[in-house]
Image (cartoon, rainbow, N blue to C red):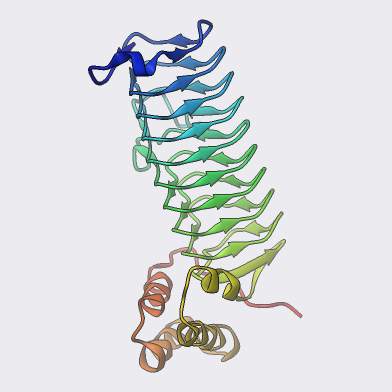
Length: 272
């Protein structure tokens, strides 16, 4: 085990039963609980905490002030039948919370080669993040939700409990997905989604308000929703109308760019 920094006494919160590979790099003020296993190629940043029975496989880099609850298995091999032991990575940012039995897999060489998680995320118990996923910042993944390989979740999105995200799906910024939803197409930013199969039922007004989005922009997003889902226009024509009538805010720009970039198509509108 390698210890970063010169004042090594700060890191002596490692339980005697923990197994740490001699090439692992452990930052300052790190706590490692009973029966943890830290593998080769693991880097753990300053002030991170591992409760008992946490396993971190390498190559994995963990940022500062991250928390791992008991039973979490981080950086495991990708669950992909084409994986043949290639060296791939998991990169985790700062200030993340991973609760009990969360599982996160490394990337694949046929994907990005890495799985990447940003900062300030909260992954609740039994959440699963598969190979080559990209998670932004301030994301909440609720208990039992699972992300298949190559999926992307943008900043401030919330995924409800037991929801399933299909491979290659993109979940847009500040969207909210209901519990047990089946997500097989892209979720546009700022939308509320629910159901199995899933559908968009409106704009995440409460989330936008909580993040300080001005009322006029919330109203503009409501209008964008109506154009996209209620006008009967094709996607291309709806994008053009939104751009011509509602441009001028970063939120509308994010919305439009997401729609232009979708490859799987977007989740459909409200069902009656």
